[in-house]
Image (tube, rainbow, N blue to C red; front, top):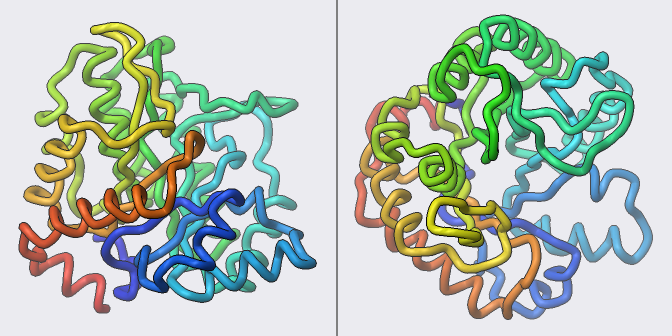
Length: 286
């Protein structure tokens, strides 16, 4: 089980610059933790840096990266990883997660591209994750991504994710919305997929909204409220894995804080319906 510090619990909120001012006027406990993309904040100082610290000092801080590009053919950017480590130390970051994907080779695509589901890719990606963990001196969590076309698949998405987590000995950021999106786009059973993931690897959850392009095509946008089928799948995730810390993602079309607070309270209400799994509680407290 992930050794997430036991102070990380409840419902968290993705912190965007547009939320800095509204959060300063919101109730101090509106979110139980915050998550940021470290790339957006490394080296930021002055008045903006002070406003950032004013918010993040109120609750534990999690980082969810965008540009590690763990599946890319180019070498790992170890200078960037060293900058990450300094940022984590400076801001007492509780947990670092990234995407099980890549975002470029000799440049940045500003998108998350799927890694081929192959044995060779399992070995390659796992070795790179282990190297990142060694450089950072901490475990990291990898997120199951949404994708729209499998590339050169020799195994299932589920088998690929499980193999990487096991070989790299890393944790899982379980994105519930991504499971739902992929289950529609790739015609599989979301519940069966969820239940087959390795419970001992789950660090925390993501939940978000999406856009229905067609009855058989969903686009993962993080630009709308969470829909009922995703709430239901999140509730099932709590039943299977226990009420793990859960992050609400909202990247654009950001509504007033009151609306985000209502979704955060919906997460807390769902968590309260499920008992903490004893094994998870023991490992988190260790």
